[in-house]
Image (cartoon, rainbow, N blue to C red; front, top):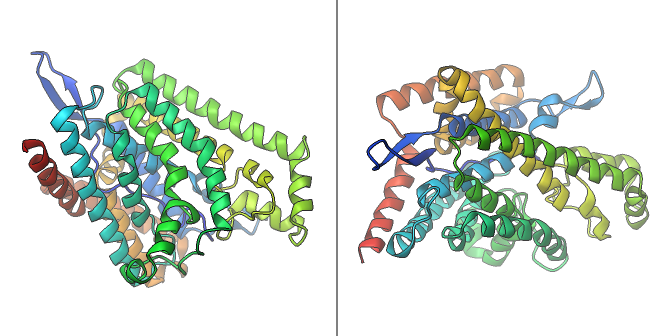
Length: 406
């Protein structure tokens, strides 16, 4: 299944915001709501990877699949953009040498995350490994670090509208996928195929996903400590997701798009088309007609699917920021897990590679939830940053400092 069976993690980005202190100097404090939202995305990914995708009793997709498939990856990507905004100046983007240092550090960040992803590929986890895609996400994000909110939102809209068409065009022109997850060997022997997969033809194509990254950077430039902004995020996000889904369903069922797809793809039955709407493509959408770009299924990466997931990401971020105001201490395990998702996601992939979870999926889901929560809280209190997060942070900071000082 091509779904969120590889949801995302950003590796090393911290939910730390620069805010003016009482003395006028800038201080740094964590936004628990951002970390909690990232931890929630991690739990959603674990659920989709571990729990059954089909509810046999009710003969429909399982609740965990319906709630999290595709949306967990989108939430991670959006929050990655938020973290990049924090790292590059928060509400006031860095300029000059500091911005040059941020961009150079982002190259190091991308390299470390991608390298870990490629190395994990050698154990062949039974899911799509998004870490290698994140390396590409961060490289593509470099030119956008210095932009203001308005230009970031325009860039997000441009990627959302144009990239899906490039994606569909590329499926008939660019090389086919590497079987399974690309490894370093594939990168050396089939560089064009791997690059095509990371940019356009894979499960998490970087160009469509830049809609999430740019939107996330824009959100990170806002005053996320403001209750008004938090309410706006939750309300606007929910409205955007509902509106995009309603438009998609109306186009498919009322305005005849479903019939046009069926007639353009005669070898597919109605059940097979419905499966794409619910479970996503295997591995890519058919290219028989551009009307396929109206479907809202997970990992279809169509404009409306991107809008739905982006709206849900905005809602989740706003909701957890508001929730942190009321029950912040109760979010500690979730926020701790969210502060070290690079490490925990990598452990999750290694665990999935053993195949043990197939025997008792419900038990192993809750076991991972418990272990991740306890491990994250204990590690955060005893050490601080997660091990892979610290590796990413030290690498990027060293590169950034060297470039800025020059």
